[in-house]
Image (cartoon, rainbow, N blue to C red; front, side, top):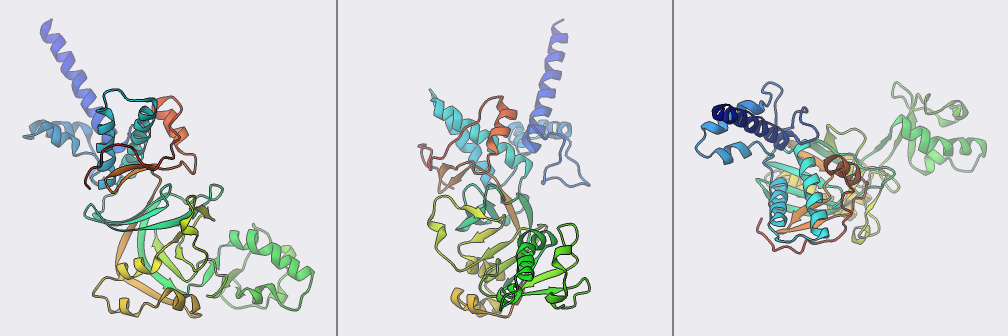
Length: 371
Protein backbone atom coordinates (compact mmCIF):
# COMPACT_ATOMS: atom_id res chain seq x y z
CA UNK A 1 0.00 0.00 0.00
CA UNK A 2 2.81 2.38 0.88
CA UNK A 3 4.54 1.71 -2.44
CA UNK A 4 1.25 2.26 -4.24
CA UNK A 5 0.78 5.67 -2.62
CA UNK A 6 4.36 6.60 -3.42
CA UNK A 7 3.94 5.57 -7.07
CA UNK A 8 0.74 7.59 -7.32
CA UNK A 9 2.46 10.57 -5.75
CA UNK A 10 5.34 10.34 -8.24
CA UNK A 11 2.92 10.15 -11.17
CA UNK A 12 1.04 13.22 -9.95
CA UNK A 13 4.29 15.09 -9.29
CA UNK A 14 5.63 14.28 -12.75
CA UNK A 15 2.35 15.30 -14.35
CA UNK A 16 2.45 18.59 -12.43
CA UNK A 17 6.03 19.28 -13.55
CA UNK A 18 5.12 18.58 -17.19
CA UNK A 19 2.19 21.00 -16.91
CA UNK A 20 4.42 23.60 -15.22
CA UNK A 21 7.01 23.39 -17.99
CA UNK A 22 4.31 23.70 -20.66
CA UNK A 23 2.87 26.79 -18.98
CA UNK A 24 6.27 28.42 -18.43
CA UNK A 25 7.17 27.86 -22.07
CA UNK A 26 3.91 28.72 -23.83
CA UNK A 27 1.69 30.35 -21.23
CA UNK A 28 -1.15 29.03 -19.12
CA UNK A 29 -3.83 29.96 -21.66
CA UNK A 30 -2.02 28.83 -24.82
CA UNK A 31 -0.40 25.60 -23.75
CA UNK A 32 -0.95 23.96 -27.16
CA UNK A 33 0.33 26.92 -29.22
CA UNK A 34 4.06 26.81 -30.03
CA UNK A 35 6.18 29.61 -28.62
CA UNK A 36 8.29 31.80 -30.98
CA UNK A 37 11.25 30.08 -29.29
CA UNK A 38 10.30 26.79 -30.95
CA UNK A 39 11.05 25.54 -34.42
CA UNK A 40 8.56 23.60 -36.51
CA UNK A 41 11.20 20.92 -37.08
CA UNK A 42 11.88 20.62 -33.33
CA UNK A 43 8.56 20.77 -31.44
CA UNK A 44 8.77 21.36 -27.71
CA UNK A 45 8.15 18.19 -25.68
CA UNK A 46 7.46 19.03 -22.01
CA UNK A 47 7.82 15.42 -20.81
CA UNK A 48 11.20 15.05 -22.51
CA UNK A 49 12.28 18.39 -21.01
CA UNK A 50 11.42 17.19 -17.49
CA UNK A 51 13.27 13.91 -18.08
CA UNK A 52 16.36 15.77 -19.29
CA UNK A 53 16.22 18.12 -16.29
CA UNK A 54 16.21 15.11 -13.94
CA UNK A 55 19.53 14.02 -15.42
CA UNK A 56 21.09 17.49 -15.07
CA UNK A 57 23.38 18.39 -12.15
CA UNK A 58 21.02 21.24 -11.15
CA UNK A 59 17.47 20.00 -11.67
CA UNK A 60 15.68 23.30 -10.89
CA UNK A 61 17.95 25.43 -13.12
CA UNK A 62 17.64 22.99 -16.02
CA UNK A 63 13.85 22.84 -15.63
CA UNK A 64 13.39 26.61 -15.59
CA UNK A 65 15.49 27.22 -18.70
CA UNK A 66 12.34 26.51 -20.71
CA UNK A 67 11.21 30.10 -20.08
CA UNK A 68 11.70 33.12 -22.37
CA UNK A 69 15.35 34.19 -22.15
CA UNK A 70 15.00 37.90 -22.90
CA UNK A 71 15.71 40.41 -20.17
CA UNK A 72 12.22 42.01 -20.24
CA UNK A 73 10.70 38.74 -19.02
CA UNK A 74 13.42 37.97 -16.51
CA UNK A 75 13.29 41.42 -14.90
CA UNK A 76 9.49 41.26 -14.52
CA UNK A 77 9.77 37.80 -12.99
CA UNK A 78 12.26 39.08 -10.40
CA UNK A 79 9.96 41.99 -9.62
CA UNK A 80 7.06 39.60 -9.03
CA UNK A 81 9.24 37.51 -6.71
CA UNK A 82 10.04 40.62 -4.65
CA UNK A 83 6.32 41.34 -4.26
CA UNK A 84 5.73 37.77 -3.12
CA UNK A 85 8.40 38.22 -0.46
CA UNK A 86 6.51 41.12 1.12
CA UNK A 87 5.29 39.86 4.52
CA UNK A 88 1.84 41.49 4.46
CA UNK A 89 0.86 42.54 0.90
CA UNK A 90 -1.70 45.33 0.63
CA UNK A 91 -4.65 45.28 -1.76
CA UNK A 92 -2.61 47.47 -4.10
CA UNK A 93 0.29 45.06 -3.83
CA UNK A 94 -1.93 42.11 -4.73
CA UNK A 95 -3.28 44.01 -7.73
CA UNK A 96 0.23 44.76 -8.91
CA UNK A 97 1.20 41.11 -8.52
CA UNK A 98 -1.70 40.21 -10.80
CA UNK A 99 -0.61 42.81 -13.33
CA UNK A 100 2.94 41.47 -13.30
CA UNK A 101 1.66 37.90 -13.68
CA UNK A 102 -0.60 38.64 -16.64
CA UNK A 103 2.21 40.46 -18.45
CA UNK A 104 4.52 37.51 -17.87
CA UNK A 105 1.79 35.41 -19.53
CA UNK A 106 1.89 37.74 -22.55
CA UNK A 107 5.67 37.43 -22.79
CA UNK A 108 5.40 33.62 -22.86
CA UNK A 109 3.03 33.86 -25.82
CA UNK A 110 5.31 36.23 -27.73
CA UNK A 111 8.81 35.52 -26.47
CA UNK A 112 11.69 37.16 -28.34
CA UNK A 113 14.26 34.67 -29.69
CA UNK A 114 16.72 37.33 -30.90
CA UNK A 115 19.76 38.71 -29.05
CA UNK A 116 19.63 42.08 -30.84
CA UNK A 117 16.35 43.77 -31.70
CA UNK A 118 14.16 46.86 -31.57
CA UNK A 119 11.34 46.65 -29.03
CA UNK A 120 8.29 48.92 -29.03
CA UNK A 121 6.16 48.71 -25.89
CA UNK A 122 2.85 50.37 -26.72
CA UNK A 123 1.50 51.19 -23.21
CA UNK A 124 4.89 52.69 -22.30
CA UNK A 125 5.02 54.77 -25.53
CA UNK A 126 8.63 53.65 -25.64
CA UNK A 127 11.10 52.25 -28.18
CA UNK A 128 14.19 50.41 -26.98
CA UNK A 129 17.18 49.15 -28.94
CA UNK A 130 18.39 46.00 -27.17
CA UNK A 131 21.70 44.17 -27.63
CA UNK A 132 22.54 41.06 -25.62
CA UNK A 133 20.19 41.95 -22.79
CA UNK A 134 21.24 45.60 -22.53
CA UNK A 135 19.20 48.64 -23.61
CA UNK A 136 21.56 50.77 -25.69
CA UNK A 137 19.01 53.43 -26.66
CA UNK A 138 15.45 54.47 -25.81
CA UNK A 139 13.09 57.08 -27.24
CA UNK A 140 9.46 58.12 -26.96
CA UNK A 141 6.64 57.22 -29.34
CA UNK A 142 3.22 58.30 -30.55
CA UNK A 143 1.06 55.24 -31.19
CA UNK A 144 -2.38 54.35 -32.52
CA UNK A 145 -5.41 55.75 -30.76
CA UNK A 146 -7.78 53.30 -29.00
CA UNK A 147 -10.19 53.47 -31.94
CA UNK A 148 -7.33 52.61 -34.37
CA UNK A 149 -4.83 50.69 -32.23
CA UNK A 150 -1.33 49.80 -33.30
CA UNK A 151 -1.18 46.00 -33.70
CA UNK A 152 1.21 43.68 -31.90
CA UNK A 153 3.56 41.98 -34.37
CA UNK A 154 7.11 40.83 -35.07
CA UNK A 155 9.02 41.63 -38.23
CA UNK A 156 12.30 43.01 -39.54
CA UNK A 157 13.44 46.50 -40.44
CA UNK A 158 14.93 46.01 -43.90
CA UNK A 159 15.48 49.63 -44.91
CA UNK A 160 14.16 53.17 -44.73
CA UNK A 161 13.22 56.00 -47.05
CA UNK A 162 13.93 59.70 -46.69
CA UNK A 163 11.10 61.84 -48.10
CA UNK A 164 8.87 58.81 -48.69
CA UNK A 165 6.00 58.67 -51.15
CA UNK A 166 2.70 57.56 -49.62
CA UNK A 167 0.64 54.99 -51.51
CA UNK A 168 -2.98 54.85 -50.34
CA UNK A 169 -4.40 51.36 -49.96
CA UNK A 170 -7.74 50.76 -51.71
CA UNK A 171 -9.52 51.02 -48.34
CA UNK A 172 -7.74 54.27 -47.44
CA UNK A 173 -8.43 55.73 -50.86
CA UNK A 174 -12.12 54.83 -50.70
CA UNK A 175 -12.75 55.97 -47.11
CA UNK A 176 -10.37 58.92 -46.72
CA UNK A 177 -9.97 60.38 -50.19
CA UNK A 178 -13.05 59.46 -52.22
CA UNK A 179 -15.43 61.82 -50.30
CA UNK A 180 -13.15 64.77 -51.11
CA UNK A 181 -12.76 63.70 -54.72
CA UNK A 182 -16.53 63.49 -55.14
CA UNK A 183 -16.98 66.95 -53.67
CA UNK A 184 -14.28 68.33 -55.95
CA UNK A 185 -16.04 66.83 -58.96
CA UNK A 186 -19.45 68.02 -57.86
CA UNK A 187 -18.31 71.55 -56.97
CA UNK A 188 -15.66 72.56 -59.48
CA UNK A 189 -12.99 74.84 -58.02
CA UNK A 190 -10.05 76.77 -59.41
CA UNK A 191 -7.60 74.13 -58.22
CA UNK A 192 -7.87 70.38 -58.05
CA UNK A 193 -7.97 68.60 -54.72
CA UNK A 194 -5.43 66.08 -56.02
CA UNK A 195 -3.01 68.72 -57.30
CA UNK A 196 -3.31 70.82 -54.16
CA UNK A 197 -2.26 67.87 -52.02
CA UNK A 198 0.48 66.47 -54.30
CA UNK A 199 -1.62 63.43 -55.26
CA UNK A 200 -1.46 61.58 -58.57
CA UNK A 201 -3.68 58.72 -59.76
CA UNK A 202 -2.77 55.59 -61.74
CA UNK A 203 -4.70 52.78 -63.38
CA UNK A 204 -4.23 49.06 -62.70
CA UNK A 205 -1.28 48.99 -65.14
CA UNK A 206 0.53 51.80 -63.35
CA UNK A 207 -0.21 54.44 -65.98
CA UNK A 208 -0.90 58.01 -64.88
CA UNK A 209 -4.43 59.13 -65.76
CA UNK A 210 -6.29 62.40 -65.84
CA UNK A 211 -8.55 62.62 -62.77
CA UNK A 212 -11.13 64.52 -64.79
CA UNK A 213 -11.81 61.33 -66.76
CA UNK A 214 -12.77 59.34 -63.64
CA UNK A 215 -16.39 58.81 -62.64
CA UNK A 216 -15.91 59.26 -58.89
CA UNK A 217 -19.59 58.59 -58.13
CA UNK A 218 -19.26 55.06 -59.52
CA UNK A 219 -16.43 54.15 -57.12
CA UNK A 220 -16.72 52.63 -53.66
CA UNK A 221 -14.74 50.65 -51.09
CA UNK A 222 -15.66 47.50 -53.04
CA UNK A 223 -14.78 48.98 -56.41
CA UNK A 224 -11.70 51.21 -56.58
CA UNK A 225 -9.48 50.07 -59.49
CA UNK A 226 -6.99 52.92 -59.12
CA UNK A 227 -3.86 53.69 -57.11
CA UNK A 228 -3.40 57.10 -55.52
CA UNK A 229 0.08 58.25 -54.57
CA UNK A 230 1.12 61.32 -52.60
CA UNK A 231 4.48 62.88 -53.39
CA UNK A 232 7.00 63.71 -50.63
CA UNK A 233 6.55 66.98 -48.84
CA UNK A 234 4.18 68.80 -46.55
CA UNK A 235 1.01 66.88 -45.76
CA UNK A 236 2.46 63.46 -46.54
CA UNK A 237 1.27 61.13 -43.74
CA UNK A 238 4.64 59.31 -43.66
CA UNK A 239 6.51 62.50 -42.80
CA UNK A 240 10.16 62.82 -43.77
CA UNK A 241 11.36 59.29 -42.92
CA UNK A 242 9.65 55.90 -43.03
CA UNK A 243 11.08 52.51 -42.09
CA UNK A 244 10.44 49.48 -44.27
CA UNK A 245 9.04 46.57 -42.28
CA UNK A 246 9.05 42.98 -43.50
CA UNK A 247 6.33 40.97 -41.78
CA UNK A 248 4.04 43.91 -41.00
CA UNK A 249 0.90 44.74 -42.94
CA UNK A 250 -0.29 48.32 -43.11
CA UNK A 251 1.69 49.63 -40.12
CA UNK A 252 4.38 52.26 -40.50
CA UNK A 253 7.20 53.46 -38.28
CA UNK A 254 7.91 57.01 -39.34
CA UNK A 255 9.27 60.40 -38.39
CA UNK A 256 7.62 63.72 -39.07
CA UNK A 257 8.25 67.36 -38.29
CA UNK A 258 5.61 69.02 -36.18
CA UNK A 259 4.59 70.12 -32.68
CA UNK A 260 6.48 68.50 -29.77
CA UNK A 261 3.64 66.14 -28.84
CA UNK A 262 6.11 63.73 -27.24
CA UNK A 263 5.98 65.75 -24.02
CA UNK A 264 2.32 64.80 -23.50
CA UNK A 265 1.74 61.95 -20.99
CA UNK A 266 -0.94 60.28 -23.17
CA UNK A 267 0.36 59.70 -26.67
CA UNK A 268 -2.11 57.25 -28.26
CA UNK A 269 -3.13 59.68 -30.99
CA UNK A 270 -2.10 58.14 -34.31
CA UNK A 271 -4.19 56.30 -36.91
CA UNK A 272 -2.61 52.92 -36.18
CA UNK A 273 0.94 53.88 -37.12
CA UNK A 274 3.89 54.69 -34.85
CA UNK A 275 5.69 58.03 -34.92
CA UNK A 276 9.25 58.09 -33.54
CA UNK A 277 10.74 60.94 -31.55
CA UNK A 278 14.25 60.41 -32.97
CA UNK A 279 13.91 58.54 -36.28
CA UNK A 280 17.26 59.75 -37.63
CA UNK A 281 19.08 58.25 -34.64
CA UNK A 282 17.52 54.88 -35.40
CA UNK A 283 18.33 55.25 -39.11
CA UNK A 284 22.00 55.94 -38.35
CA UNK A 285 22.15 53.04 -35.90
CA UNK A 286 20.66 50.65 -38.45
CA UNK A 287 23.23 51.62 -41.06
CA UNK A 288 26.04 50.87 -38.61
CA UNK A 289 29.25 52.75 -37.81
CA UNK A 290 31.23 51.46 -40.80
CA UNK A 291 28.57 52.20 -43.41
CA UNK A 292 29.64 55.35 -45.29
CA UNK A 293 26.00 56.16 -45.99
CA UNK A 294 25.58 57.09 -42.33
CA UNK A 295 27.64 60.23 -42.89
CA UNK A 296 25.31 61.30 -45.71
CA UNK A 297 22.15 61.38 -43.59
CA UNK A 298 20.81 64.95 -43.55
CA UNK A 299 19.39 66.82 -40.58
CA UNK A 300 15.70 66.68 -39.70
CA UNK A 301 15.13 70.10 -41.27
CA UNK A 302 16.93 69.04 -44.45
CA UNK A 303 14.93 65.80 -44.58
CA UNK A 304 11.66 67.73 -44.23
CA UNK A 305 12.68 69.90 -47.20
CA UNK A 306 13.45 66.99 -49.53
CA UNK A 307 11.17 66.52 -52.53
CA UNK A 308 12.81 63.41 -53.99
CA UNK A 309 12.74 60.08 -52.17
CA UNK A 310 16.01 58.42 -51.12
CA UNK A 311 15.92 54.71 -50.23
CA UNK A 312 18.49 53.00 -47.99
CA UNK A 313 18.52 49.20 -47.93
CA UNK A 314 20.10 47.69 -44.82
CA UNK A 315 22.94 45.25 -45.24
CA UNK A 316 21.80 43.58 -42.00
CA UNK A 317 18.06 43.81 -41.31
CA UNK A 318 17.22 44.08 -37.62
CA UNK A 319 14.28 42.30 -35.92
CA UNK A 320 11.55 44.56 -34.58
CA UNK A 321 8.97 43.46 -32.02
CA UNK A 322 5.86 45.46 -31.12
CA UNK A 323 4.44 44.34 -27.78
CA UNK A 324 1.68 45.28 -25.33
CA UNK A 325 3.07 45.22 -21.77
CA UNK A 326 1.37 47.30 -19.09
CA UNK A 327 4.36 46.98 -16.77
CA UNK A 328 8.12 46.82 -17.31
CA UNK A 329 11.35 47.24 -15.39
CA UNK A 330 13.08 50.45 -16.47
CA UNK A 331 16.29 51.63 -14.89
CA UNK A 332 16.03 48.98 -12.21
CA UNK A 333 12.51 49.94 -11.10
CA UNK A 334 9.22 48.37 -12.10
CA UNK A 335 6.90 50.78 -13.89
CA UNK A 336 3.14 50.37 -14.32
CA UNK A 337 1.39 51.89 -17.36
CA UNK A 338 -2.24 52.70 -18.23
CA UNK A 339 -4.08 49.92 -20.04
CA UNK A 340 -4.67 52.17 -23.04
CA UNK A 341 -6.34 49.52 -25.21
CA UNK A 342 -8.28 47.87 -22.36
CA UNK A 343 -6.67 44.45 -22.81
CA UNK A 344 -5.81 43.67 -19.17
CA UNK A 345 -9.44 43.21 -18.13
CA UNK A 346 -10.20 40.21 -20.35
CA UNK A 347 -6.83 38.58 -19.72
CA UNK A 348 -7.16 39.10 -15.97
CA UNK A 349 -10.59 37.44 -15.91
CA UNK A 350 -9.25 34.43 -17.80
CA UNK A 351 -6.24 34.04 -15.53
CA UNK A 352 -7.66 34.99 -12.14
CA UNK A 353 -11.44 35.00 -12.50
CA UNK A 354 -11.62 38.51 -11.06
CA UNK A 355 -11.24 42.12 -12.02
CA UNK A 356 -7.62 42.79 -13.03
CA UNK A 357 -5.66 45.84 -11.83
CA UNK A 358 -6.09 49.29 -13.32
CA UNK A 359 -2.81 50.92 -12.43
CA UNK A 360 -1.35 54.12 -13.83
CA UNK A 361 1.36 54.82 -11.27
CA UNK A 362 4.87 55.40 -12.56
CA UNK A 363 6.80 53.48 -9.89
CA UNK A 364 6.45 50.47 -7.67
CA UNK A 365 7.87 51.71 -4.38
CA UNK A 366 10.10 48.63 -4.28
CA UNK A 367 13.89 48.74 -3.90
CA UNK A 368 15.78 49.29 -7.11
CA UNK A 369 17.67 46.47 -8.75
CA UNK A 370 20.46 46.53 -11.27
CA UNK A 371 19.83 45.68 -14.90
